[in-house]
Image 1 (tube, rainbow, N blue to C red):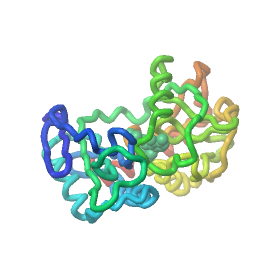
Image 2 (image 1 turned 60 degrees about the horizontal axis):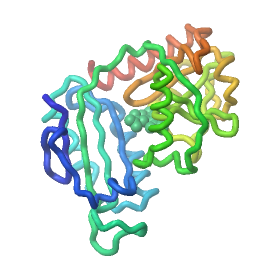
Image 3 (image 1 turned 180 degrees about the vertical axis):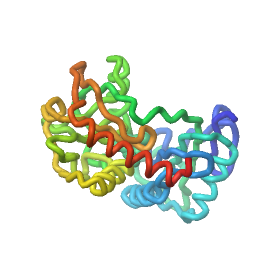
Image 4 (image 1 turned 90 degrees about the horizontal axis):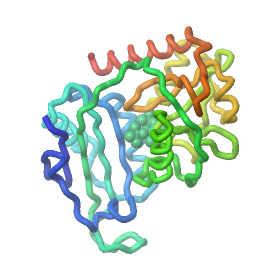
Length: 281
Ligand code: PDD
């Protein structure tokens, strides 16, 4: 099946779907979103994504009234229509459709729901990644999953131009996260990761990773680490809903990690087990 699009009740092939010019997502990016991985009708860690989505709506004061059950039913309808063994499921809500002005539109302007289902090949979880570092020029609302992703887009494009897969943001000498991933290191048996403050997205996969580490008796330190620590780390790990858990093999063209194979494999296998159990694949 082709990729599926859904907008305010209308479903169709994604390439044929359109949105009104006055949707505030178009000119302000005034909305929030979630991106998940689905196999058939199952969505990995769906409840955690829905929880974060509700937090984003609240942070942006978007009065989206559809209840959780109806949203899940609509997402499932889109997955059923796409009929893909493995798919990326994306949804976003924008504040309203209204003539452009910065303040919220007055009166009864209703939020817009947009859903996309696109076929996805789940790459082998052990596939290593090439990273670059990039200055983190983003604002102090990185914890909210808004549509405003220009620094992320530019950084990821630069990674691509460098022949790499992902850009790692560095703010004041400390690693925050990737352009669309969270970044962690294993050092001396401890998993170190940036705390969930205003400067990173609280990744669903990050939270799963921390839980798995506890289950594997790997201590976790939620403290920011310096850029240099990436290069002296035993392993550099990358997480996201679409990528799962990966490790880095180079950063800025320099070989990194590969020094704690045993813990990396334990974490990876624990993640794969968790994924297979929940998704029954
Ligand atoms: N990105 N940090 C940023 C800036 C992200 O955009 C993402 C996810 C993550 C990882 O979060 P999670 O584990 O919940 O996927 C961290 C998604 C995949 C995207 O924008 O497509």
